[in-house]
Image (tube, rainbow, N blue to C red):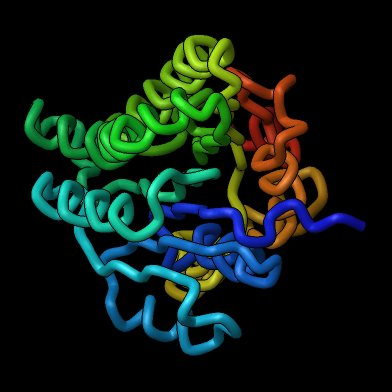
Length: 254
């Protein structure tokens, strides 16, 4: 079987834990050249220690909420990698903003973290992708974008991300850039919110699992094959699409 990801240059945001960590590990095994960005230097160092081809990758501990950090990191990636083949955005979360009455400043932070960062990163690399007429961009949304089962800010930000994927995916399709997204439900992975939920509130976690149709919590590794499909040059039909991968949670959990 042909390994189409060998030597491909892939940028992954939110790469140090959760789904971002699993994606980073999976693509490193394919021989891809990775540019990984996350806030935790220690977690990134732990990841890179396990890589077989350490010299092939770029590792950045940076807070992409800070514009200067984003500009500095993306400029360095361009200087060392040039154009990218694939961008995978796993950055996102509540960013500590869960009080719906705190006002626009907090709302703006959530929108920035779940959508604005990705938009700004994309636009750093899109000119070269358009010039070359190729590239794949994948965004990780959430089932809460279709529900109201999380904070007002988080639900709204992920809904905005969905709109961006749909419209920007259509905009870029003519340039053979395939921008798409997935809408996962709850899943467990090292360091993610659900793993913390399980640790700190085991009884509530188990009750949540029992309400899932399969009575079992999905693991982040189960999304890898889909991510690889969306990252391939056969992903044309997924451009501008959002794939629901919520294990029925969107219907079962209200």
